[in-house]
Length: 236
Image (cartoon, rainbow, N blue to C red; front, side):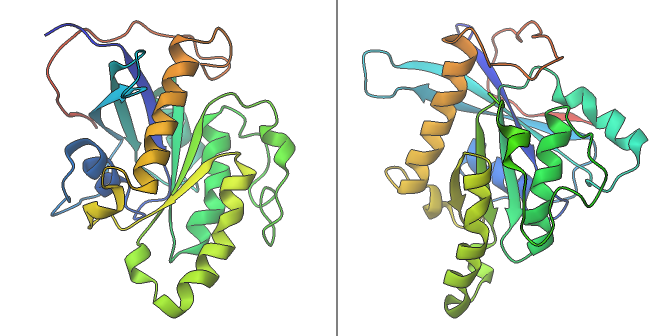
């Protein structure tokens, strides 16, 4: 098999929001039957056809790095996590639609990953207020995904989605809300599938077709992995 070019996408969010279930669904197109806590980082690979259906179509590997831990971790834990943030081409921010705190913590996760976690705890988000200038010069493509949509009662769904809609706007990102136990939310041709494909296309464009803005500042690009079959890697 010929070697495929790759991009690295972080999957960030609080413990328990369903990152592992999401990554498994994205890479294996199957529901994860018995999810467990991620210790360190777990890496899975998705095959993606860039600009599918056009003359420019090309197949890439999307490495999805599911980073475990909590934004409230000690500085030593954050320092350990920092190794996973090297040479990042895109970030998927995951929050639990039933947990408002997990939504608010996405700001802190993103700042940590972008090597800009310089603001004291509690300053970033206060009653929904957010300083968008902190991301004014960000060139890393972002995608916001809300999980556990199935756990929100129909009568409350509009209220919850209205409350969380500002996240995507703040991050200048598209938003996907789904239930990781139901593959139909990412069915081919659905609006969510289109958004996901558009995000991966943007990540690839930033990495391979644009000269600027394809790496987190301060983290040089590393040599890509060689060719091989689809596989999962686990880092403890």
